[in-house]
Length: 624
Image (cartoon, rainbow, N blue to C red):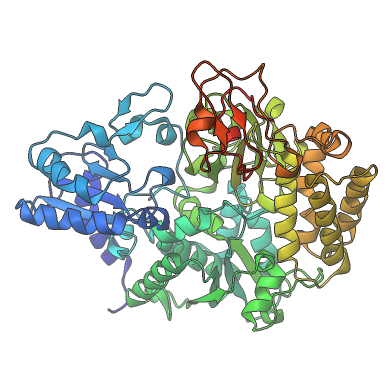
């Protein structure tokens, strides 16, 4: 297709806006009277959404409804734990945990006869009541979407649907109406800070690069998401890849770059495929490539697939990897804005940051700055996971208290006999925030003061069955495994810290081990070359700060207060605490537990395989 003009962009928008209006609950709009939007993100596909999608299309044809009911596969809906999920419009009915066998009833009852199927609704974990409408479910109702504004509303593989949601209008504005200085000024005015880790001001970074001399400059997207439990970037690329493409073109105009790369790990095949399709479609429309929209500005965009090394999330290691070298950090300065990819001025932002840019340019920096707090503007996307009812992708205004995210949006702790203990923020580079600080607002300064970092947005909720020493060991094992080995403090220091943590969890801790961990942490933080080593000890330091008594119990009393470390458990029944309910007996996979009604249970240690199933099912902490 030839280059698209601004007027043609508007024509495409008008062409699809009626169908889009239907998905906003406006009845009587569009060629179809009903849309079924089924999530096609990685999580839902793993749960069987592809088969459900095919079954829906087949059943609608069978019922003779193909001219009235449209079936659309979207990107990630966000409510990942209940997949496959589907929203019906214009009513906004939300269905969860769909299976192929449910489809004939759903199409017959809802699509044909207008009677929604209640048993497939979301059930509130606290009230046990079915909630039919998506907007009434607290998980969705309490979010504010900017980076995720197109979540579950469009076909991620259709550029026309993206244009129908004001797509590429901000880019047209930036290319035709704004100077590079105007663009940078608007981003600075917004107060947007990088969403990938350290939170450096985005507009300031762009300004440094804009003012750096040199004809060849680069724009990079960091989609090398490697934190355990994190899936923010992947979900955006799967659901709304054009927002990233549009944001990068705007930045390229701002700094004078004509080449860009998206660095995405190869373990994200669906994200890579949809992003490549988006780039190809944008090229076909003349929105990427030579002389974009007849403005004289050109920008080529390519995908570079990484092999999954966590250290390649560090900006200089990522650039070395694109250059064909081993992904290892280099000393800074010079910073990438001066000498980055191939020693040329370069800006690097992550996926979430890029997804914010079109709306900042389209609606203005003042609009964006009006959301959030004085220190932290806009919204933040979190991957909420762990011991929480509503696992999924959450976007909230900066300053939202952790309590609101964990209890109101997340639905609280699943098991009633368990209590909230801590939340890990920032992944392996972050730290834990305990119960008494759960009202901490999600803003950069407050999170750092509490002992964690915002990071890219991983948020792992832990209940009182979590051993904080073992949690620190898990993250240190990850950091040590992912260390590139270039600098001695990180390579050897993290290995030594891991050895000590493993020894403590095995019941072999000694006096002085805790102090050694603290000394090693300080040395590694101060002497490591890159952010991986500099922040690697954070989970250990934050758990020592708030849960030092657990370390001491492991070392001196040879006990694990959370009853998690197997080496420190005896697997005996506390006869005074046992309520004789038999849950341990009923759930033991190897019949190692004896029990009779109105009698306490007993464990045969010769049969016991120490799987901890009895501990997990006992509501009275009667097994130690």
